[in-house]
Length: 81
Image 1 (cartoon, rainbow, N blue to C red):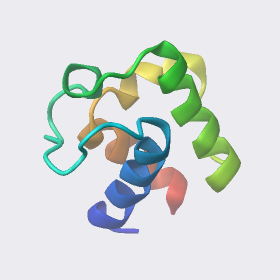
Image 2 (tube, one colour; image 1 turned 135 degrees about the horizontal axis):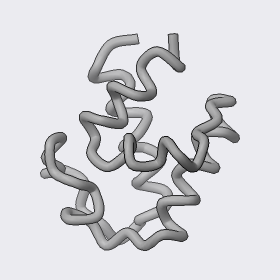
Image 3 (cartoon, rainbow, N blue to C red; image 1 turned 30 degrees about the horizontal axis):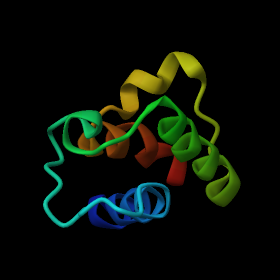
Image 4 (cartoon, rainbow, N blue to C red; image 1 turned 30 degrees about the vertical axis):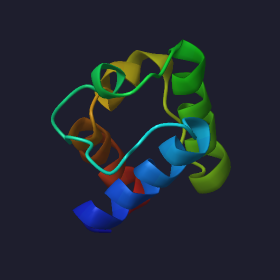
């Protein structure tokens, strides 16, 4: 799966959780929490959606690897393969 396809899957999940956020100008290299009004519960919802939709388990120790869109794609890319 390519970068853009994985990015879109992540954006789709965030769009459902942060429904009031404008996701059109997200910078892939900036921490999501610095760009969006996401709290720790929203972040857990994102992790749970990854598990529910794609059967991808993210251990708590790996949560920092999901800080930016780019780091999400790097971490999740092999798991989507």
